[in-house]
Structures are given as C-alpha cells and as structure tokens.
Image (cartoon, rainbow, N blue to C red; front, side):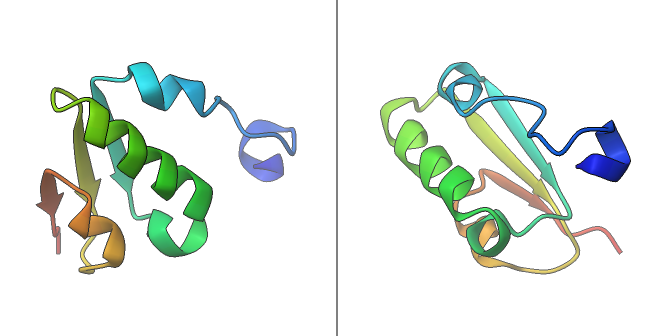
Length: 74
C-alpha cells in the first residue's frame, strides 16, 4: 500500500463490504492473501443475496468459490 497510496494503511474499511452491491477482486486470491476480507465477504454475502462478487484472475483460486462470476482472462 505504501508504494501505491503513499501510506501503509488500507484505503477503505471492512464495513464498506456490508453495504456494497458489487465487489470486484482483480488478481487477488483473497482467501489466501486477505483471509479477514474473504471471511467478511462470505459472511455478508450470506445475508445479502443482492450483493455480487466478481473475481478477475486467470487462475482458479479458492476465492472463485465465493464469486458470482469468475473472469479467467488470458
């Protein structure tokens, strides 16, 4: 985060996931690299069927199991 945003803090908060209608993960296996985020997505998704998760990653990862749509770009 420091190189990208100039600060070593996360540019958002977990509560945003609870109200989001769409979550897009690009090239990130959240199940492995961000387990807290992944758990929050699973928990909030169980309560909000209207929320969609899109994973854009050429790999089929554990995070894809949570996704409504997996775009495996080459």
